[in-house]
Image (cartoon, rainbow, N blue to C red):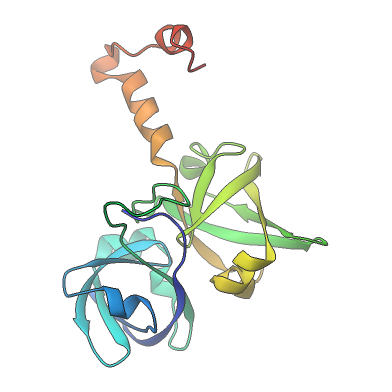
Length: 212
């Protein structure tokens, strides 16, 4: 489990893509707080630490991870967002991020404003289904708030600090990004559907309880 607050930007040192991909990332901060077997979010993808070297962390990624994320598009020298897993008792400043990517989006445009920038992304329909205005979304592992949602995509507003401490400041139109929607919406939909439509949680029940 993660929060979407990026700890540092790492650099891809090695990337061998095969049946299982081996990814080696240079790290200055996260490396001091992880051990073998720990989980680290790399551009929002939850990966297991397989080895630790001098200033480098290695990870393995299985075919399912590669097919569902943009990790396969990384290149040596590229930059990635790194976040160590959440520990009990730590402050949650972003939102609950699992590191389980729902799909890949594409940056369509960036509009610079005086005090922020508006990023527009396209998203697959099955991912867009769970994106709501003013809701939370993780883009390459970054916890962000949705500004608006359209038929084929959505927008977010990004402050200068976020641009400077994450890879968003390096993104250009056409770049692919990992998307993870807020898990709360998925659970609510599941409970409403229930087993064969027989859930005890109904729209009327949620309305009567003040949730709608």
